[in-house]
Picture 1 (cartoon, rainbow, N blue to C red):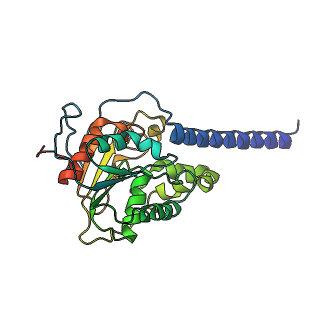
Picture 2 (tube, one colour; picture 1 turned 90 degrees about the vertical axis):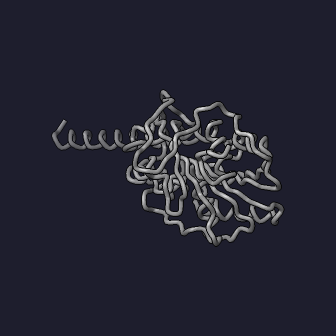
Picture 3 (cartoon, helix red, strand yellow; picture 1 turned 180 degrees about the horizontal axis):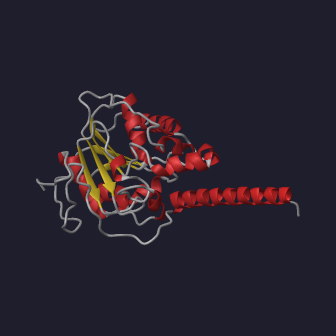
Length: 283
């Protein structure tokens, strides 16, 4: 075989190997997003000292005893590649504490942030002011949908808002996917809004603005967490969760897939909805 032919064969082999690697990465990202593929999970983690955070409660779930809310609604918004079923554990917890819950399914697998927000606006209009107070809780992309929705809509009786594991400042995973596999970004349009610096969301339209809290995770046992610099929950860096207008941040030792299913997180949600703080000093 001539030298020129050998070079061509080697070049083709490198190209095929590169394409195969990119396809593998895309499959891993997709499967991890949809099915929550994970490695060994950690049950502990250090809290980043860069923020004013509180330690999670050390008592058992169910200790919080408060008067049931009257005609208050909590809107739950699920994350990327999920449906309303993913929020069911938190929904049942809130309902057991006397809250009404509205939890729609949005097209977060293939619909852009804009598309998902417009769909949610349609769903929300059907509520037609049935409740005296309306709170919002979102996981992951759901938090971005809530922020974009509130920046465009003045909500009567707006209560408090909590974002759980939301990539308010993007995630390195989306940047990697955009760099090495653009077709992935074309198919899974929500990922475009996860790129660092890609989305800037204005403050809420309501005046005064609602009290907004954020919950981040640093249990990075998920496989994709290895590709993220610094503390992360396996999908989102801890330092990506804070955002302008946020009142309080707490970091919990859970990963992205489990954090919104944990009873400890649910207790913190109740505290913030009731008192506007994760400290729970008045329980």
